[in-house]
Length: 531
Image 1 (cartoon, rainbow, N blue to C red):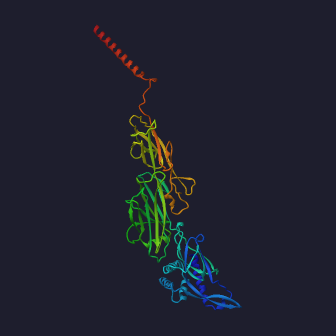
Image 2 (cartoon, one colour):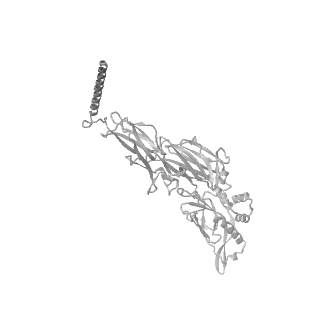
Image 3 (tube, rainbow, N blue to C red):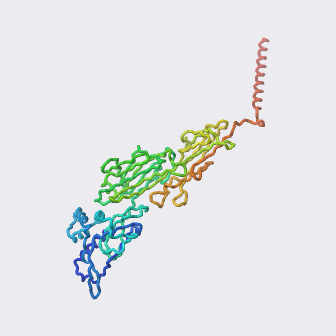
């Protein structure tokens, strides 16, 4: 738009002056009847994946003059296209600018400043026909007759995350250099939304959590800029939990507008009340949050503020365990009538499952062995869930696991087997592999996807679980396993050991003590009788 702002007054003033000069004054000028227009983005790269429509708003007539035997074509009469003239007049009236004849209108246009040229472009876009007389190929117009053009981006590569750029006004040829090959720069704008998992005040793209635990989220979305006259606009985010997550609908989201040195907390409301948002489609799978007031949206967008929303969900019994995770996606949708844009971001939470298999020393599986699971938390052991007893297959499943240090202890042995009350300690961890391969990243991490919009790969990203001290991992599912063996029967001393000796010695000692006591008693009675 900076280029457009600079071109408008220079070009129009120049053309107005030229119309008042005699044709002979152009003897030294040889204008080219047509020019080209290349559309570049903010990085000065041709937007070859976008489609543009061109509408000639102003034309000027050509005539031929001969000086010194040389024929030259000159442009002498500037004319407004009647299709757009009423919209231009209406806009000039709204900002108290003079209008009447084409010359007066053009003079007022050349005096536009600030955001006025952009607002005029929007006004002209509203009346532009669906079929454009000129269309770009790979971001470039060729053979454009000299004039003043409205250029509208009609389609782009949505996967690059950029929204359709705002309409612009362009002069062919360049009014400063006279170059018929014009390069215009459109403002490419990403309407972004970024979702993160919040753990210990740090932000991540992936995490681990046990079933029943709460996962805390925040989303931060930019607010686009809108022209001041635009009233039909909307802005909302939609959050969608996977089946393994339950949105805590009784916990109202915290909604804020934030910027550098600025924070405004919004309240839930209805209608178009300023400073409010509305919630709809609230269920266990998510919600829709809409900003209510159009003037608020325009003010916040022009100031560069963002929408910050924090909320949470619980990992439920339907959660995917092992290598497959439980994604949560948020989508930002906003519109400037009639254009609608959207972009998304996804984060993912993994949970582990541990299968304990109880076996005898003959490798048979054992039913009715009971175990308790504990986790080392803040310096002490805490029991996780309730004790469980092995089924007919000799197995139990613990699903309330995430990363950390654990121990499993047998509390009841199967009938006919010894109880092994010695706890088995182990540690489990999880990693992701970065997009396109590379170094494994310990979960939680903030680097699942670095090169794609929306973290869409998180939907299929896998976790790799591992454990210590005999814990195994199924290569396909990522389910953890641990086998514990019991010894059959009761352990008693053998014939080659101390055997019954201790009982024999004890018996003899008792017998001798009895004889001694009888002798003492007999001697005492004899002494009493002799008195």
